[in-house]
Image 1: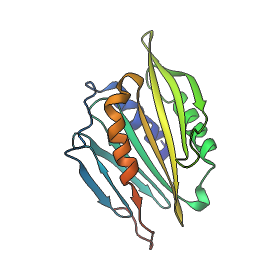
Image 2 (image 1 turned 180 degrees about the horizontal axis):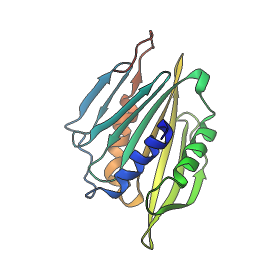
Image 3 (image 1 turned 45 degrees about the horizontal axis):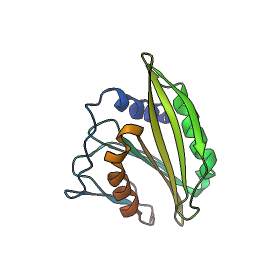
Image 4 (image 1 turned 90 degrees about the vertical axis):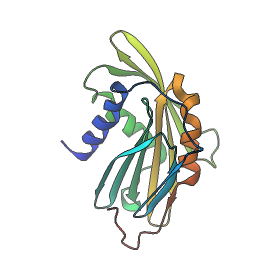
Length: 183
């Protein structure tokens, strides 16, 4: 199993083993600072997985329910166009679900070029039920690296996770590499 398949499997498995979403606790926010990456995240969310291999770093932040934040850092040599990255990420999730399937994926144009945000809506079909979901892809560029922030939640839980997603987005920093590695 390669890193990309592992990342997809981990992100999708959280969709099925969740216990309902809670409001993001931003008043009890925690700080994450490791290697080049730092950000704040809600007190009732947790950093669950961190993978670093050479020029690539991947980090997961999970909500108490089924929401997830995926942070991926690449060197500029490995960076894709924002829209192409989002479509490739989405396509890679299509066939990787152990049960159920993703359908009705639609990308919506970037509303505000300054935020560099792309939105995807899709359904997860499981046991003849369709659960609408939303993914937001945000690209941040730095001198030597590029970072993609992916925020995913069910549409019905979006109001409970939005403040947490915004906290991570607004506080996210990537320090210059100085050949620093995530540990």
